[in-house]
Length: 104
Image 1 (cartoon, rainbow, N blue to C red):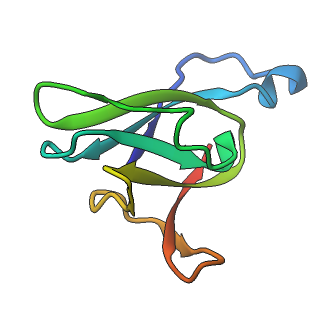
Image 2: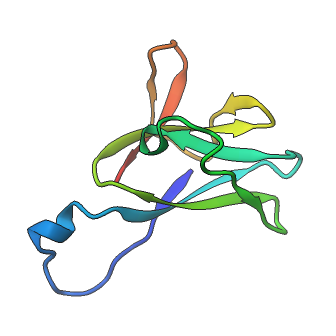
């Protein structure tokens, strides 16, 4: 699952800042996994670019800067592509499996 960092404040963003990348925290609960990474449209589906770190509660996390718009992503858990059961929005990909969908 991915969480978007909520922004607060009353000022409107300028057109220049509207296209700026946003900080997104991806997370996956897999306490038994040895390595987890996140890949998607935002990194060319390169699972080596964003390895995740395991916290004490068994939650893998990674903060990634993502451009505004719709993106698809998935997790690589110990070498196998996986969906996060805590994330609801998915779509069918070109391989007939599912990807997560995120609107940034």
